[in-house]
Length: 350
Image (cartoon, rainbow, N blue to C red; front, side, top):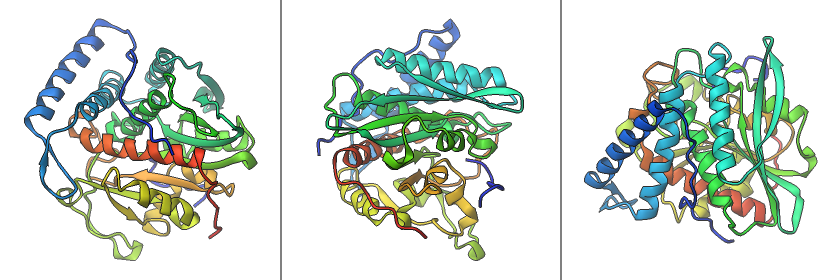
């Protein structure tokens, strides 16, 4: 998520991995992944999470396997590849290749949408899950895969990219199809000013007047932790108070989506904050959902919050809460299914 955009201020799915999603690469990558997964499994077994009511719980097998899969993707993007942007162009290309190969392993044929910035080609990557009865209507879910200069970008936004790949697996492998089509998009250039999503909004793969909703996953792997800013209506937050919290931005533009998220959260039990739609250091305009809201499309931004490692070299994999990331991914999966299979949400201009 960029610091500031100066230009423009049901059939629930399981996330249980079902196929070989991994991408064969160099021996060093395999060593990193094997060590990381072993350590993570040990951590999850030794340190059980807590339920919404505060009682210790042991992660289920499905939750554990999903979290390990999320961990694998974040480790590769932020660890093996690291900083990835136009200034580290080879790394940005490696990240795109990893995403495409991961999608290919799941049986998808990814489509590239290229555009030129600063004399270099960047590309959005998308796959379509064809709807069963209303395929001409589209629900978009996205995450940007570039990181800011000087940061490995584990939370911003390896977390959202890993969640996007998990949703690709949840909706694939012969899973039931919702009525509408679902388009999963990995955006490039968000840190340069929402470049990828803005390009898509100007050159959509499917007509925008048939796009019924958009969901963005950006920075969903940490706990909000920052000082307050009264003039911007941002409260002081502490990581210890936010181990189960998720900010939901965009609900002011679609009360229908707010109601759906609140209802679906009965199954994931996150503590939701519907806030930051206005003011709040322009957070609403600083991720890719803004490109769609500007076109009158209901859009939601899932955002776990700012923290001291935001846009620093310390935004690394070791600081990600993968159990929390799994819960947020599950909520996103259920919401996408409902938007694609239920009534189309209304857009309320603000």
